[in-house]
Length: 208
Image: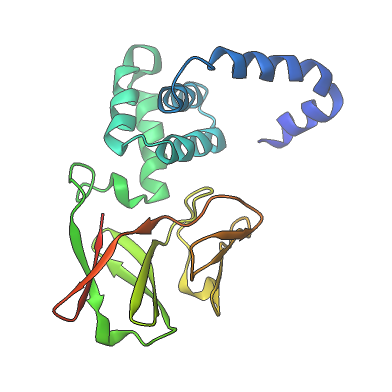
């Protein structure tokens, strides 16, 4: 939230509480995907960048596809106008979400090559770029875990320098993750996005 909204909540939380309850109640008969897509549109209409990022992340987490987000923006053209849709699209490009890349936005999930298994040792973690997507790979006892490098909170692309042993810390809001399981172990509650894996002919593949 913005500093201004935090201030209003601090001094008149009693009044604003009724508003937030109203907003929550108005969406209780909608499925989570639809509710979050509507919230995305309202944040584009008001051009609230933090809110747009927040509800976009929620919409994707609730199962919205990137193309559904794009379609929702375009369907709202009569209310938003082209300038606000372009504003939202510029933020999407700035966020650098792999799912929105031209390479992936229309593709069905498929096996994609990640790396030769000989390039990673037991107990090692590597950050690997695979086309439009960057992933963390963890090897243990000849099994492999592959995670999206984007934090599930506000989709910050986490660098390799954020890794300390098996703990990965997002530099933006300090969410911490156990790379062995993908679980969030501090600050937040959402795990890293994990991909199904397989090994064929000495090469590691992941499904996305």
